Image 1: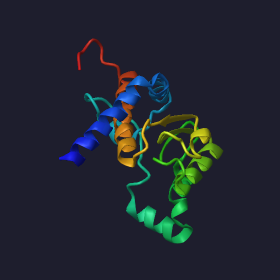
Image 2: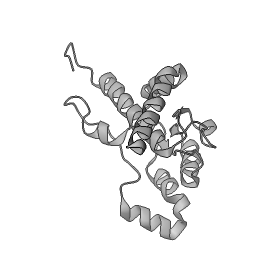
Image 3: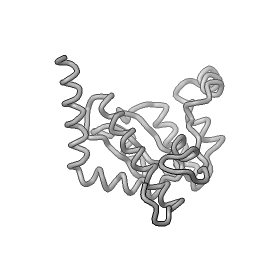
Image 4: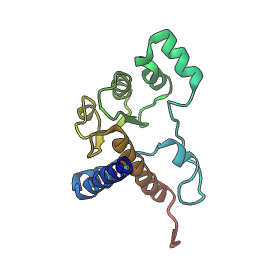
Length: 174
């Protein structure tokens, strides 16, 4: 029971820290202004039926992941996909709880070279990736699972904002 209560308290504290951090909240809004490609929620739907938005998650094609990892090394699995798929004006959402993942840092460098907007989601320190991003949302937590929890909450908020801006509902309540 103590472990359950401890996790719930730390989770509550991390969410409260996010709520209390005005810069964190402003960054979520700024990301929603730029990001048009958060894969699952935008291709499908978040709050209501509407046209799909083009998006792809670079982590889902196991054939590409294993082929690139075998031929070029795991640190290149996202960089190679961005090199092949990324176009100027696209948005890369790079996620690394530490901000130090070599494959993510390479992906960011390639995205910047190709004219993509780079949005980062990371932990409190931001690691090496924070200064490399156009916008970086740094979850106010240290523990990986709490950082990931904040990221998924922020991603749902961002998707909802983008969905409403791209496909506004006229006067409907949601």
